[in-house]
Image (cartoon, rainbow, N blue to C red):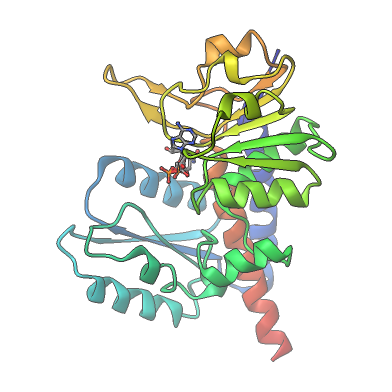
Length: 287
Ligand code: NAD
């Protein structure tokens, strides 16, 4: 059984991003810049935000965190995003989730302008992804695709079961696997007899947010298993959506939690940031 660790994949992507960042800075006389907007002090969000900023700087980018209190209104945050959209020195903007309940996700999705939308959440970028057009990569699903590429697991011709249909993970994951010529069984909480469907799959991607819900009875002998889940148990342990020890007995390859899909997200985010910077400079030239 092969353990699909993120570490070598992250190192490979970060090294390419650092090289591109260096070349960009030399050519344009400025560093690519990522701005993260944080609302409130959710401990996990504070850690993720700090990590994004630190990694951006490690790769040679400029990074900025703009923090609002949880009591901030949508209008206040929107005004800042509008300013950042118009700031020529800002290449990528990210609004850290979760947001307070007064923020309506269906409106927030449109705030960051599509050319700075490094999370790939804007409906234009989601649409471009579905159509297979050049676009920002949805961070977590693209991270899964990079793991598969690195470990030479080609989804083409395989039967892939994606469990979960969120806009952040499940839906773009299914789209990327389809583009990679997998036949995708896209399942969710209302799928009847999920186990029987999942057991047919050569490749299973679990993204449901239920600690260790997918055990070996869902898995075909020799399948590849990707665990997107990050769940904290009552004892404080971080576990995935897959019962690792049980499934590892049956599958041919599996991502661990932590250390599997999780670290890929920031690597892709920063790949998106340098891409945004390059695209924006290229557009200036063509104007
Ligand atoms: P979500 O709650 O938005 O969506 C969960 C999806 O799973 C829903 O579509 C639902 O239909 C489906 N689902 C729920 N229970 C199910 C069940 N028993 N059987 C089948 N389908 C079921 O969650 P999300 O944002 O997609 O996140 C999923 C998991 O991935 C979470 O554990 C989250 O923490 C993790 N996550 C990790 C990263 C990362 O690695 N960087 C990024 C995003 C999310």
